[in-house]
Image 1 (cartoon, rainbow, N blue to C red):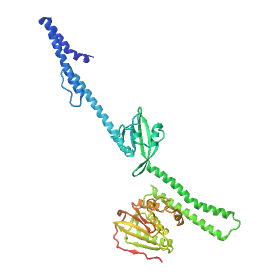
Image 2 (cartoon, rainbow, N blue to C red):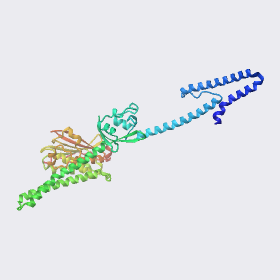
Image 3 (tube, rainbow, N blue to C red):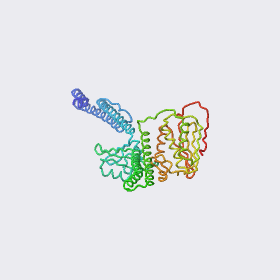
Length: 446
C-alpha cells in the first residue's frame, strides 16, 4: 500500500508544503497562484507521460518503452518486468508447441486436432498424406467438408467412438485402408487418430484365402479316398481289376496330399525368422546337370530338352533351397509344355549377374496373370494345373528362396508361344573363382 500511494503523492505533498512556506512571504493570493501553477505543471507532466505510454501500448512491439521520469519511471519499470515475464512465458509455450508439433510429425500414425465444432486446428504430415489435407490451408475448416466419406460423416455424427472405424479410400496408387479412432479430450476437443492398415488387411485376406485354398486342395483327395474306401468296405465280392484301379487312384491322391504338405512345410521354413540362410558355395552347373537328368525322367522323352552352361561359377547360398527353387522352375516347364515342345535350361552371366533361365515353348501365360503367379495357390487354369500334378505352391517357394538370396524372378510369356523364367542373382552372390570358360550343351535326350 505505501508503494501504491506513496510515490504518486510525494510531488503533490511537496508542492503543497512549498505553497504553505511561501504563504507568509508572498501572501495568500500569490501563494495560491504558485501552488496552482505548480499543480498544473505536475498535471501536464502526468498527461504527457500518460500520452506517451498510451501511444506505445497501441503498438508495443514497434519499439521499447518510452523514457519517463518521476513516478512514471517506476510504472515503466513494472511494465518492463511484466513484458519480460510474458516474453519468457511465450517463449516456453512456443518451444512446447514446437516440440509437440515435432513429436506429432514423427508419429507413424495420422493425427488431427479438432475443436468443438469439428474444425481442424492442426494435423501432422501423415494425416495430410492420408486425407489430402494441408495444415496451413485447411486450418479452421470443417473436417466433413474435406473428408466426405459417408461412413466417416456418420461416425462423427453418432458420437460413439468406442470402436475404431475402418475407412477405405481410393488413391491413384491403389486403395488405402485406414483405421480411424476419435479420442475426446479437454472441454469439447477431439483427437482424430488414423493408421494405415492396408498391409494388415491384405495379410488377413491372404490368410483367409490360404485356409480356403488348403481346404479346397485337400477336399478332392480326401473325397476320392473316402469314396473308394467306402466302396471297398461295402463290396461283397472284390473285382481284382477294380481293386487295383482303386488302390492306384488312392495312391495318387495320397501322393498329391503328401506333396502339398511338404510344400507347405517348405514355405513355413522359408518364412520362419528362426531359419537363417545357410551360406555355402553352391556349384550351380553341377546342380543343373543333376536337375537336367531329373527333367529327362519327368519328360519321359516327350520333349526336346537342352542344357546350356555359359557361366561355370556358382553362388553363395543354400544348396537345398536353390535345388528346390530350380526344380520347381524346370518341372513347371516340363508340365506345361505340350509333347514335342522345346525346353532350354541355361546358366549365364548377364551384366555381371548370374542368371538361371528356363525357356519353353509351352502354352504361355496371359499378361494379366503374370503379376500374381507367385501367389500361393494361384492358378491360371485350375483344371489343367491339377491335371499336371502341381500343388499351386511351386512359384511361391521360388519367390521366397530367391528373396532369401537377394535374387529376383523375371517372367516373360506370350500365349501360344511359351514362357521364360529367369532367376537373377546379384553379383555379390557370385564368389570370385578363377575357372576356365566352358560351354556345355546337352543334346536332345532322344
